[in-house]
Structures are given as structure tokens and as C-alpha cells.
Amino acid sequence: MSTVVIPEILLPSKADMPRWAVNACDQYTSDGKYWEDLKEFVGDAPSALNLIYPEIYLKDNTQARIEGINAAMRKYLASGVFREVKDSFILVERTTQSGTRTGLVIAIDLEDYSFERNSHAPIRSTEATILERIPPRVEIRKNAPVELPHVMLLYDDKAGEVLKCAKRGETLYDFTLNMGGGSVKGTRIVNPEEIIEKFNAISTRGNGEKFMFAVGDGNHSLATAKTCWENLKPTLSQSELATHPARFALVEAVNIYDKALTFEPIHRLIKTDKANLFAEGLRLEGCGRAEIVIDGAARAISFPENIPEGIRQLDSYISSFIAANGGEVDYIHGERELKSLSALGVGVLLPPIEKRDFFELIEKGGNLPRKTFSMGEGNEKRYYIEAKKIR
Image (cartoon, rainbow, N blue to C red; front, side):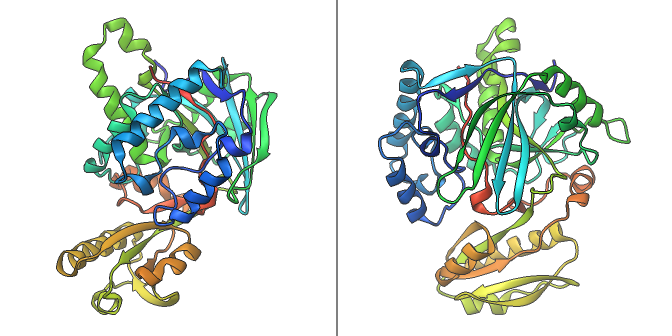
């Protein structure tokens, strides 16, 4: 079976799109006001906000929230909120402060994906998967009738061959996103088979190995989908194994060389009342550069030139510091947000990984340290728009 498959995509047919689409659930995890303001804006309108679990609330009345999400999904399916888009991919043009980023909403076969560190699967994880983060997400997904993806996969297409062959059909949506997310336009792509052929053509590496996609955003969400599929497989017949909708995950695929796709580091925020002690004990060496931030003021510190190795050293120090002194670590997208939150303790602003090095780093060294990079600022993350049945 093909790694890339043509999904039956669900789009809202009865919704105010600016209130329907909402940002990825793993954003603004220390900013409760963001999510409260979003909830107020959405009001009682049909919205993806009712179908996702923002991670800021993962420890807040979990079971009731999950039951509410599943009930909302069933209600939306039964009441005609969704319509189906068949035999197509969707071309997504997302305009933010970084420019217009172009992606393709496709489905991928989870049999061809692995989150193991040194995997040679066609679809590979790019960062270390924290196994203890999967079970709570499995609880959210295991009884859900639909999925809404914030997963973004990267493909290596410097010549832009995939999008060159895409044939556009009707415009499916075109609107301004809430909460400063820019704007988005979705167009039906009417030749998905040709797109699949092109993905296959560009994905063979110099050693003959197929490396089609690297996970850019949503690593733990895709790992959760994989885990749920593996848990379901023993209950299925041979014919069901080949066609069950949970085998296929909806994602957006983006060319790593897209000019509006900015690679941003994911910064560290250590929530502690011993900020100066943390700063005094941090000893990283190298010709690279990072910054430490206390009460909004940043100063440069040395950092290894090998960025993944530097992050491993930093994370090890953070873990040992918290074990000795208490505190908590959070992962922050965006320099401005980190500086504004640094009053909670101490922040570390990290350097970015270059695009040209990305696929080679994965091929040679396997997974990067968790939370190494992010694609764009928090407001540029993929908004939930499309959905797909998984039951």
C-alpha cells in the first residue's frame, strides 16, 4: 500500500470559519488568558475548540473533558456540521508575518511511520518521543470518532516538484484566522494520484532508502495515532486491517524549503524562585551562542556548535537542577513570549537548526532531542480546520 493515501476529508458546512478554526492544542501552555479569550470569542458557535484538548488543561478534570469532546464529535457528525471532500487533497495557503506557507492536506499510512530513534521507515520522528506523554493522549483519542490534525510533515523538495504538478480546483475556504493567526485559503487539488507519484519520486535517498517525510510538528500526536492503531490491530480481521480508517492519519505536508516556513528553536522556561542560582550553575562551552533571560533581560552565553548536543547538555542540567532545587520546565515557542514569561523564573533562548542540515541530521543521528525546533512562532502553528473519521 502507498505511504500517501487519498483521504475522505471532513470540512464544516455549517460554521463561521473564523470561529471554527483554532490553534494547535500544544501552544500557549503557560498562557491561560489566550485560551480563555479564544473561548469567549467562539461562544456557542460550532468550533474545533470543542473537539480538541488544549494541553494547558491536561490536569484539569480530564475524564469529563474527554467525554465532552467525544460527545461534541458525535453531535457534529449527526447534525450535519461536516461535509465530505472526496478524491482530493487540499492545498493550504497560510499567510502570517513570515509570508505565505503552502502545504498539502493528505493522509499517510501509519504502517509506514515509526517514532523509534534510529528507524528507517519512510515517515520518521524528528525528536525523542517521551513515552509517558502518550497514554493520556491515547485516552483522548481511543474513543474519538474523528481526528483533527495539527501534525505537519516535512518533505525534502528543493526544486519544488510536488507543488509544480498540483492542479487546482475549487476554493474550499478563505478567511481570516482568530487570535492573530493570519489568514488561510484551502483549494481542492484534483490530481492526487500524480501528487503521490511525485512524492514517491523525490523520496529515495542516495543510499536507495526511502525517506519521504520527517515530522515537523505534532510528534506526540502522531505517535499517539500510531499507538492507538497498534492497540486496535489485534481486534480486526484481515480485510479490516487493510481499510480501517484508524490506519490512516490526516496531516499537512510542507516542503522544508518553503520560504515562509521559518525554523525556530523551542526555548526553555524554568519556573523557579532560584533564577540566579540556575544561571550561575549553567556551564555550556563552544563557539555557538544562546541567551539566558531573567526578568525580561537577556545576556549571551556560550553554546556548542552542534546544536542537538548542546540541547542535550542543557536539558540534562535542567533536570538535575530541578531534582535538587524544585521547579518545573516548560517549552516556549517565540522569543517575545519567553521574555514575557521569564518573571516566572529563568529562560534560555536557543539557536535554530538550519534547513539544509535537517534531513541529514535525522539520517545520521536519528531523533533530535525533544523540543529542539519549532516551525514559526506560536501564532503560525497549524490551525485545526479539516477532520477525518477514524471509526
